[in-house]
Image (cartoon, rainbow, N blue to C red; front, side, top):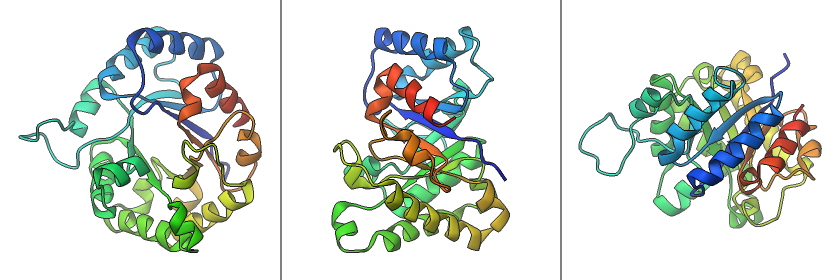
Length: 253
């Protein structure tokens, strides 16, 4: 089975309405042929959804995603954003368990699993992030850490449902540092993730896209994407420059 490449932009806490409009204009003009997702801060999601619709990209291979959601139903949870609200806006994807959420905001494996389950229950497609810190890699604990993170999600979500979204391997030591795992290092972890999915559901494992998220740039994207179990990327810093993101999308095709 050939898995369609997926490249997702994670703008993190960046953007202005003017900058977003310029980015979207350049992106729409390029019309990448791989499947793409643009994940923006909550306040800019309506702008993205409206602009993509007016550019003729809505309903195509390009969709809008959020960077987080609450694991709870709507209610008295000040400052939180419910998945129902994302669906109401027309959002189709959501990042779950990004390393920054885990490290800075205390999201445990169990919270991440609950958020993934919530997203799937509402019809959202989660990009579930897993990955190890530099200390964990140096301690030769990469596979144990990554496997535990994924196991928590698979305990809550069926592998067949998870296949509607994606799994993102993001080595924490290679995010925003300029360091990147070699293609061989990344492939080794991706293959381990695939094997764990196979143990849960072999058919779903074949269909599940496992994307790489660790300082992907136009210069290294093609070599990373050439690996057999790397099905695209979750792009952080490089996604803030439209031409760089478009170049990475081109590498995926």
